[in-house]
Image (cartoon, rainbow, N blue to C red):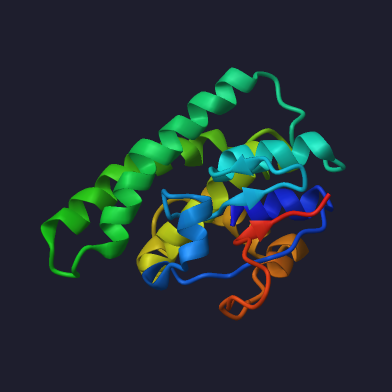
Length: 200
């Protein structure tokens, strides 16, 4: 989702290939043996296999919303490391563990420590860096949405008024609604090249 957000913001036309990870086509694995998405193949033949790298690639091409206008890129890189490692690990355990599994609650509680800090960072602001969204917001918001949707009633009752406001601003945004289009599974026809092939 965050790769789509950046590409949409950058106004880049692309050719989309939707896959089911439980039924990975051989063309995906030939292009990217790691077998995860998103994968982006540029018109010049460059392969980009991580969503954050896709975000940076797209926004460096065109950034009309100034999403890359941040004070320190190192701060962003460290922020991403925290999200993609510590928080994402707890999110996945919380999301996919069985309902009665104690590890589910433990993982949720560990994730809450990050959310407590995030709620403080959002105090008095609509977005993490001020009044407009930046790459920080779009790198994190899809994961917060996933976390909230595991048990929305529980999430809405937590004392995170700043996060609730921030997430709702995102969910009500036309950009979010635009990228949530449901695509049919891509089937091989005559073009052997897979997955998100972006034509520039």
